[in-house]
Image (cartoon, rainbow, N blue to C red; front, side, top):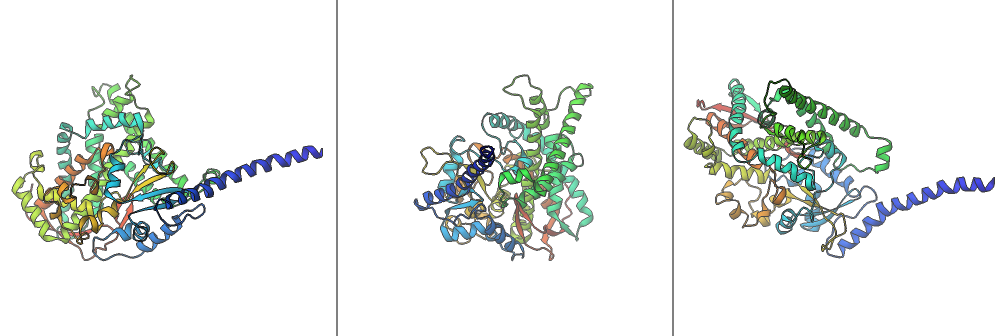
Length: 512
């Protein structure tokens, strides 16, 4: 009997001991070994703290930075990424950082960035998405890898390139026209343009990619927005996976509920399109992005076929990315034009010279040199993405297996070594002779939409939308900044104005 009792006690104790050893190995031994390995190669950084890494300090610094507005300057780096800013000043342009137990090699040197982004996907694949990113984007084009990425990228290329883009121009113009008609009653009054552009970009992606309207996709956009806020709240949260599984935090439960709601809503839109074909109301599923996805879902060739889950995830990705990035770009462009009347007037003269009072056409859009300079400088100062994550595997690299690489875009775009002492000033003339000359022919020094094989597939679409929208605004209004505006950039997936952007419009009496 005593032998049995000993056995009953010994077995759980053994399991507990093994689990404890594994826990200490993963959460203490491996981080300390990686830290020593990189320190010996001259790569320094804040020391690893058990379980939490450097996240507590990052959270506290971010909270402190966001607690007060900043002066109307464009030196946003210390505010949107105070922990990265502090580490670069202390440890140099490349350093080791700890996202909980996950090591990140943070880099902001253009040559290293080019090596990472232009290298093959097998050498520098994307980091496996966190639970919250997975809920937001699933296995969409932004996060997926391998053959599945090739398949989904090919589908997206068919929609966001060439003649398909020209066909989207009337839809963008119609959406902007709807917004401007609403603005007619607001002349001389304060308008919050970040919200206005949120509605506009949601309408544009709904109309051009999904053949619907903002009202039809409104519920999806609301849920995606809520999910992005939940994700941002948890970027620096650290948890032990076993404990998280045993008792899910409130944010995890909310994220799961939102993800389920988005899936149900997208599935309804897909079924509506399918039903029209079944009932004979349409000959095919359509030639827009949603139509191509549904065709792939029904494809009998397994090499081309998409699962329903992949279809939904791709819709989520393009609903979110197609709206969020351009929303931020337009808002910051208007802020910069409202703050720099000389450049606003230069852009307006160019627009009137090329288009007169007519709607922007494809040929004219390609001739907007000053507008392109302003867009590039806006993307440099207020680029949507504050960082890009990649994964590194052992090979010929002198790095530990499975370390993540974080490309610190904001650090690079606000680096005086790269851009000069006037780095924090709005000076579109830097791009007067093109991006190559502005970056001293270093392609990685300015890549707001990525670089290499995973360059954003919607780049041309986003730039076309921005040019059309700003051109049509400048044809009709002068823009000045409201005295009520509070400058407070914040990173919530993309760089956004924490309190919106308030401007005042005055009519030029030009009707397109």
